[in-house]
Length: 623
Image (cartoon, rainbow, N blue to C red; front, side, top):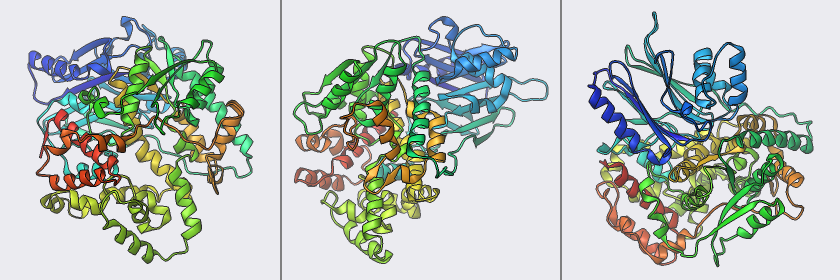
């Protein structure tokens, strides 16, 4: 796991300026790779690559990056892991390629040389990489970039008539940028910034499962999607046992591949179903005792660390527990320097804490991300389907009326979000009822001139999610696809990447092996994901085969903190002195704070505004 950066400019730099620029970019990413650094400049100094290395595979100097072959004809910077690099190396060796080291980076580069851009379809892993290919014969020089199928690793870029710049985080580009109001609108609505949008005006994100090619002779950039979720075409004759066994077989091999490392590997164990299953599989395939890590909140109703301890004892892991005894937002202080593009998910704090504890012991951990999206585990799926069965007969005009009336209530009033989320009917509740700022609340929060600039685009976040949930074969398939294509890569995986990379820890996600993803979305019928009051039915069958007999299948537990309680105890100064007061109404923020202190539930909204303000300060944004 590493940090990468680079640029190409049609206006040639001097060697000194080019070298200093790329060094500055990579130095801002040191936390992503403290073990080594490297820089490469093209002959004319118009192309520069930089790398910060977290050494996981091939700890020797042969894994140093940027990596070059054929007298700098090909140069790569790579962030991530390709878990099937051993098998690909063997295949490439039979095709005549020779290797100087054991790193997966060299495999990726040789795979590109042999198969071209289609090489990405052969990689099982999480990755972002950039390859410079020097001009040869009638082929111009070019840059090729790619991101993994699910979007585990990030890549930001700027492309204009002055050239092309890319980096693992926005802070690599320095300060002095403008805020993108459309992306701000997305953030306030969703708590994250989806797809290719970016909080910095002019910048974009390379989307999951996408590749890009920049022609350096004419500065044209082409992007394309190389992988998509398969259509749901299940074998309805297959039994639950058969589907569960096949899923377990893939999961077992996925865990086996993700335990490949030249350094020790541990597991984030919250005690929830997903992390418990990963622990079970790791204990099965590992030849060494498994190390597990969790946090505990003594005295808090959110503390369910006993479930993690029970799993650890059952599988005889080397278990580590971090107690959080001080219920305070002071926990945020250590994380502030690593805040990049804003993310409103408050579970980023406990994820950071468990990452920091884990990083004291090792460099790699497995996590449970992805299980809910693959097997239908989120409660909002069950709520939507239950509402549809109970009140789906109500005319749509009445839903709209009730939703509009509820949306006029003050933020944080009990039941407000629940009723307003039904304005489009039960099956659209995940579109209109998030925990942050719906359309009505954004109109109260944003300054009038910003609302005028946004115009009809103020509805864009909701319409974006609405378009995603229309792509499935049935309601459950639609909801899981929507979350897989937005909430997962743009919230949950960003959360894990930011919090773990802040402490130079690599986190791997066995449930997100593309083979298991494809099988789940293509072969498992929706009725085996959710039926009546039972959700993640196939996953429950899987769990019964590998977890203790008395494990509570119907509970859900992740790493969480009592944000509402903490924000009633203290109001951070970044909420009362915003640098965005010409964009966001300070008066409305004050009303949210007052309402929260008087018992309304605005913790998520206030935390989202805190993270926005800290992001603006870190990146150096202005309007």
